[in-house]
Structures are given as C-alpha cells and as structure tokens.
Amino acid sequence: GDVAAGDGQIQAYVAPAEATSAVVDRADGYSATTYAKMAADSGITNPSNFYVNDPTAPIQWPFAVGVPITYGFGMREGGFHEGADFVPGEGSPVQAIADGTVRIATEQGGAFGVTVLIDHQIDGQLVSSRYGHMQYGSLQVTQGQHVKVGQFLGRTGNTGRSFGAHTHVEILQNGTTPIDPIAWLRQHAGG
Image (tube, rainbow, N blue to C red; front, side, top):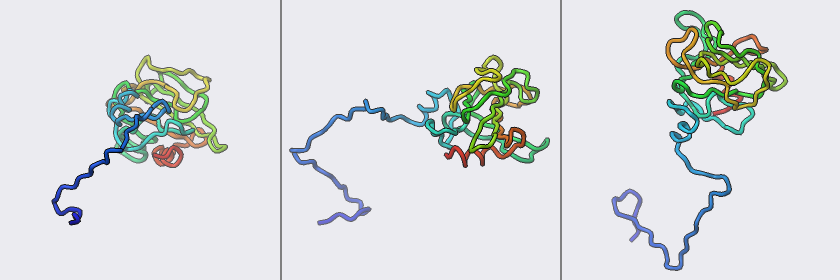
C-alpha cells in the first residue's frame, strides 16, 4: 500500500538500470563553498550572518562577509555614537563601500586612530564613509587616491579611542552629517 508521510515507515527509491550519471563541470565559474570558508578566504576571523555582502554590487558592506556589530548609531554612555562598530576580528581587511576619492588617510586620526575618509558620489549626492581604529602600518591608500568598491583600505585594529579591536564605520551625508550607517547600508548595499 501507499506510505503516508510521517507514519514511520522507510521509503526507498530504486533507479532503473538504464539510468545514467553525468559529471558536472565547474569550469563555468560556479563553485560550492561554506560560509566559514568564504570568511576565512577573506581574512575574517569572526563572521556572522548579520548581513550578506554582494561582491558584484556598486555599493557594498565594509567587510567581504557578514560580521557582528557591537555598537550602533545613537546615544550611549559617554555621548552620541556617530557610527557603527564592526567586529570581524583583529587584522581583518576593511574594504571601501563604493568607488570614491580618499579625503583623509592617516595614522594620526585622533580618537579614530588609523583612519580613512572617502568621498563618494551616490545618486548624485556627496556621501562620505569613514573607517576608524585600523592597525598601524596597515593603510593601503593615500589622500587624493581614487578607490574602487571593495578595495582593501587597511586592517581592523585597536588604535585611537578604542577598547578592543573593531572598525568604526560612519556614513556622512553631504560629507559632514552623520547618519545611521547600518540603515543606510541596508538600503543601498542590501543584505
């Protein structure tokens, strides 16, 4: 008789003798991998599923794969936090969120420590992105340099006014006004 789903009986499928098998060629550019391997290949030691980055998008997250965030935008003890703190693991590579021109790239960024500030033209508007607390000696860009989305900027560190390795990320409307970077990235980069 028929076997109803969930009645505890074993179900089996037997392929007919004339069935064939085929080898799938991965030369077409597709591959299978795990999220952990993608993170490791990207240099991220502390991945999470907080977001999914699209490496082909014109606007991306500051890390190649999702990472945890410890502090978001807004009031907190000690004042107003004008960015979000990403925690990918010490030494993880930080990437540009969009094409743009580097306004600041310095190891003497005050409270930001080793910091980069990039100006972008997005939907006809000036939008700037700041990346703070990177490791000394890790800067890969210079002031005035044009960068591409996803380009390596430096490594997550603990410089400036920082209490543990993280990357402080800000989004500045019109180059000066801080807005919630998580909300902005979700709207523009997805994930």
